[in-house]
Image (tube, one colour):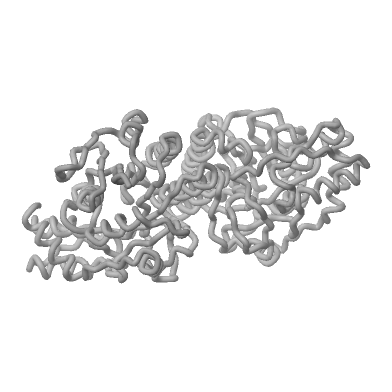
Length: 306
Length: 306
């Protein structure tokens, strides 16, 4: 069999760079596509610079690949509510055009990184299984669900194979927290710089954290999966409150954080922990890195690279 | 208390015209907004002509109203798959702009007509309750779900009250079948004109039909509802196959149909019947018109008006 050829859309970002690295080391031919310079260059991975809204650039990136990893979203969970129409135009319409392209270029499979933290909305059935209804309360979550739905439509109408990874909060090296995304690097930077940390609400909100190496392991497993399940949660298997996470950083930095409590944001769900039983059963995957080990490595990287 | 003031967006169409009539007769002050001339003028209902993508026209239509009925969708279930991006631009982005307007103009409640026939996708748990996950396999259904999600977001972020009516296939007078929508008028017209009827698949697909007077009764009930349920199915309470429906028309026209069987369309679900228990319990609503009575009245109207 020929070597598999993949393109990673959004390959220059935090998840994308790690994913390209893992795929490349596994022997896959990898092309990486993104708007900004990649966080780290990977020898042997072809880098293609371009904007997701530029159809010709996307066509050039996708052409010749059997598998497309789609990691691009135009906004972050924190900013999407302020850019509603723009997020629809860029993330949703951009993806519809991408899917049309995938059909016409003969792509075999698309793997989409969705958001386990936002698509379920306010739901007490923790840990959340993939069978729970989607009920987002944020623009970001809504547009992720819309893209998931379009993937199902394209599969039914055009036979385009798809798998959806509903990812919790990934953390680890290369996540620098500069894009208003990622509690761990943002909080660590502020503690190091003696800046206060903005906490929306009382800090009891529970979130699910996944170490980056476990996430890339998960995404690589989807490359060979061809079973009937289409949607998989990818989480760390346990919940941590915001205050617990900050405490874990303080311990490792040996320095106290200064907290600035702000009003809760109406689009934040109170609690989110993902069930990962399906991925365990179908993909033989589970997160190998404990929260303590992952935090050790992450804070070490952050202290050396911030 | 002052008289309630409502605007019906899409008030000139099949459902909208009947709804304006019912609201007006109930003593509500009604404004009707739409792109084309209304199917029937209703004395005492203010008619405002405009396009849903014209923000100024929509603002003028909504201004001064406490309640907005939103019945506009840019495409039909049959055409949406051919106009994917246009449907997002007009139906989804148009609705986001409408919701922003509703917030800034102080609208109290929005009632959205969604699609009970498409949002659930392929699901064997017939009759389908509102608790079933949404899993559309068509562009039309996807964009309806997206709008439902945006309503939830606006409620959480801005407190805009909303209710969603997942309507099955309405039928009755004024539905002329000219817009490629509505099996009953389309089939009746073709039988009368000696044209063959296109059937996608073998005709065993089961659908849920709701007589128009029962639907407007349902939509009017949502005007005064202020309970915790946000989503309601509105269906006839039973399923009919396409062949059963055509047979019912043949009986009343006393003339055989000529059927032309075409390949199934990949975006058609095999079976769809809605559970209406929630509407019975919460709204004290149920369809009062039997399928036989509804068909008698509908075919009588069609024979006189086609």
